[in-house]
Image (cartoon, rainbow, N blue to C red; front, side):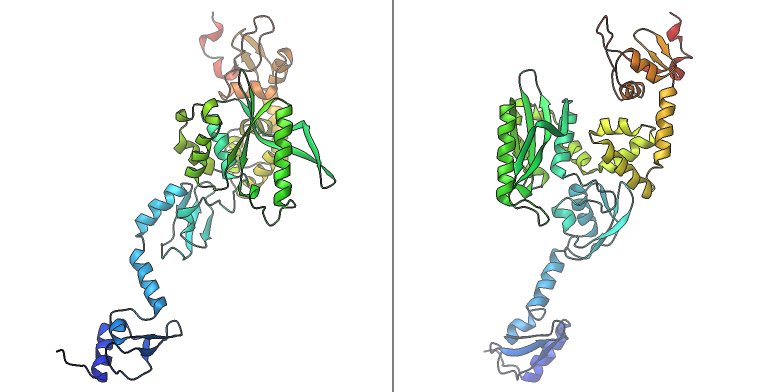
Length: 395
């Protein structure tokens, strides 16, 4: 039979553990299995436990939870690797101290630094940069990049004249996320976010209003010979959206197995604001940027103004006007006919096409601009200064 220890021996063993100095024993020790009243000075908590349990623990329940968390704590390298998988456009620059501790990060696009309130957020969900975020939802950017990756001709954020209706006594204009056509059908794709199930706090619409709007838009699309495809994006996790896309009718329309999903994911995390600034820095006009990103001129200018404030570009309204005039005065060549035009404006007027289309073609951002009125062939263009020294005109 083991010898029963005294109260002083128990307190000495408690001291020898080296981890219970913050625990005060408030009652006399009467046996190893008889509960004692204790007080944790670290968490200001009174609790009861047996001496046997106390000597093998770290203190109160909260002390135990903290130790368990430490035991599960990722290393810095492990955390950075996991965060980079979920948020490749955000760089971890601070020390990882725990899932629910703040951590310092840097945007890979605009290079601004800020603190994420809880480190675990970078592992479990997509985070947006508070400085250069474009306010476009992740599901919509993902579908935009999927269609681009498959080289599908489409329009997004489309307002049709026939999609107008009354709701709560006011006339509303319906807007569709994506519109595309094939040889036989016309399609509309709607990326239904979480607000379709639970309206945002700032929304003027109730859940019933949103359901009614969706029903009206579906019916109007059907009456105008469009096939409506709705993708459930209430869960904004990439894998969840990918699964919903594969479950939808899109699978029978598009060859989704050809999609570079990883590239689309990374591009969807990029800000359109950053893309607009990069295109501006490549000397593209606001109209050209608007056409490439499929956003309105107003949105393009707003992005560029914000980018200028972040020193990502040198946009100003005066520079924009000057740049447009300079482009219109650039000499260009029609490669099909070898005609030289003193300006893009003159060329566009002759072949009844857009100046921005010819400019995009000269920058190798478009394959052709306009068609020949007699041969109906696609017209290809180059800036005159780029080919005047070659033997193009020799033949």
